[in-house]
Image 1: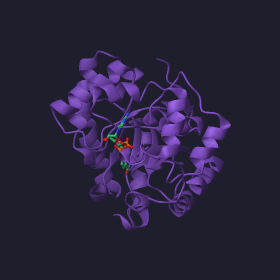
Image 2: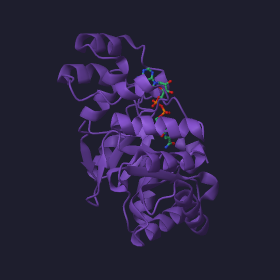
Image 3: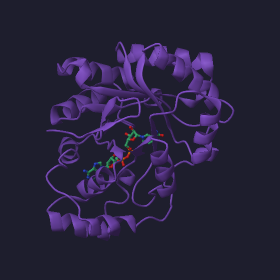
Image 4: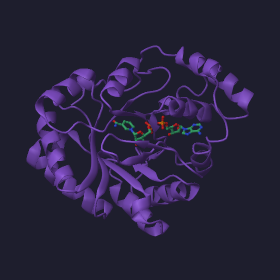
Length: 272
Ligand code: NAD
């Protein structure tokens, strides 16, 4: 299965569809789930120090027999580790838990007030030292990005944020696109909460696809990177089986119209 890639502003290519592992239990559940995802054809895995399953992700990669260069690995520095020295230390912990020689993408998990600029300086060092192929941020609002631009040299390649048709982040997407920063959706399915939306089921039925597939297709056609999560083998398959249909412009607009600027989860201005 051929997954399209996005080219980040430093020329690194990243699969536009990846696999998220938040709330996948550490140990055997992570190993089995990630192996299943790799078998199904995913080549990008999104983990974080917070998820407490980096070891299982690393084990699954080694046991899969797929070569390291074919897999794109993202991990993130957690809030309590932010700051320059502590981020460098957190990175060493993550890379050793994963058992890898390099990380593809390292992200600042949340913009912790008073700390994220120092944290970013540590990511710049890791990037310059060749420990990571790309560096980015997560949950950054426009004002956080502007602050970073004013106080650093490297620009993030990507911003991973809550994004789904109920919270479509139009302003932030426009800002990121003007600054050549890719946008990645976390909770692309609204963690399951928008699958029953009648507009989505209607469109899904017309295409002989599922609501989850329609939602993921909406993201892909908007140029957004997606990382749906599931531990159910049939859904892991379903969520990658997206490349044999296309939503029309009219269908894309019907889904756009579901936006209510409604965050389902934490607010980056009050979460650190
Ligand atoms: P998601 O939108 O991917 O939803 C996952 C849930 O939706 C599953 O637990 C399951 O209940 C349901 N589901 C999945 N596939 C389905 C299908 N085909 N049919 C029906 N139901 C289905 O939510 P998520 O896990 O929150 O987000 C995806 C990934 O994003 C995470 O695993 C993690 O890697 C990342 N993430 C990052 C942040 C951040 O702060 N950077 C925050 C949350 C999540």
